[in-house]
Image (cartoon, rainbow, N blue to C red; front, side, top):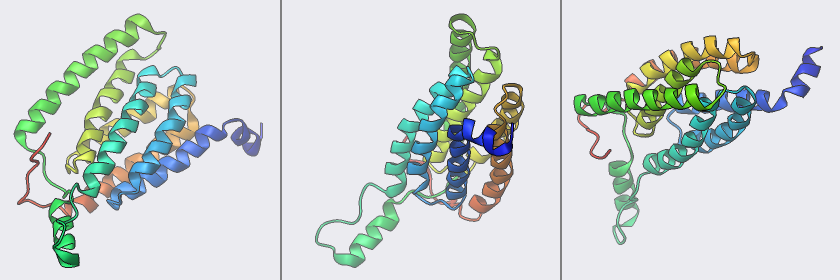
Length: 214
């Protein structure tokens, strides 16, 4: 089979790869348009992971759809100045409410660690008992850690990049065993871009801010 022939038979996955690369590029740039692109990418990969029998990863894309809407809302800021303050006041209000990059607080880190462990146990139990997933443990690990990392991204917590590095490395190995070769390439690119994002976001950290809301 030629390359063009293979791509024509796997065009949905190829499209998802392209959208995913654009998504991470926008994430590194902290551009709010990453969220609508993320919605498109998730919709594509619901189908890709379903056909690959990676059910936890498929379900994860549904979570991505929801968190993308929340992330869009949080990144946009919930107040753009107050009525009657004029253009200067609106700009000031937007700056104050716009979400800034911050470090992970210890308390939130403990909560997220507990959430990860609980999610892993629940998802593993479901996959191993109720589905024909050939890799319930690894599928559960990637899904649970990705859920935590995506929430941290939506809140612009810097350390989410470390989680993505782990997720991307494990995903490359897992998807390679499932024959999802375009997705393997995507996650290899994700891995490289995660290190780029780690450096880029560090330059914009606001150490004087804290996450006020979960």
